[in-house]
Length: 91
Image 1 (tube, rainbow, N blue to C red):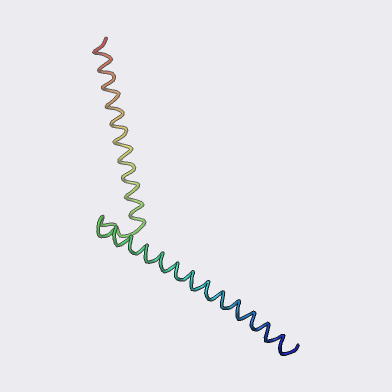
Image 2: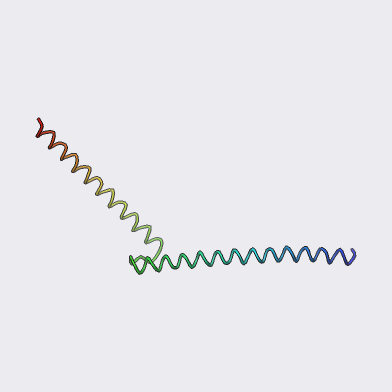
């Protein structure tokens, strides 16, 4: 192999390495930004709702959804009772 060819191949490899390093830095920056965002969200949840983790948030959401479903059923039952009473009154 002649020296010029080796130098050219080394230049190409250096360019590829430089691109990989830039991409790695970009990905690292994105990961850090996501981690910071997650930390900020957890901090807000802790300060505003006394929730310390995403798992606690999921549990709280589940609890609220169940409560909403229960209240919805209670309202539906009440509406049925009202309908029945109105029907009886109209008889």
